Length: 79
Image 1 (cartoon, rainbow, N blue to C red):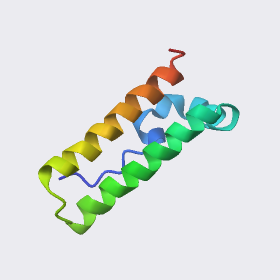
Image 2: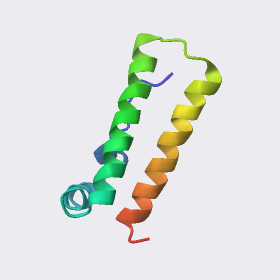
Image 3: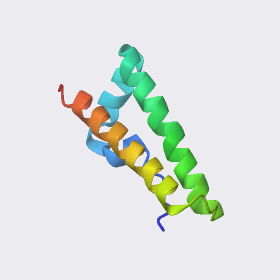
């Protein structure tokens, strides 16, 4: 299991300034970024503590994070 945080600035380092700007100027983007951050922290907490929540539940958390990341990436690229 990976213990990498997957923060947005780490996932998209070339878009770090745009992430910051959109968090300030776009309420929907800010909400998505906050959801991503919270979900990412929960995944990291489960991984780091070795909490057994069941493979399917854990995979669901990671899928939700991936969907949020895709939507965020689309917004960062003007889609």
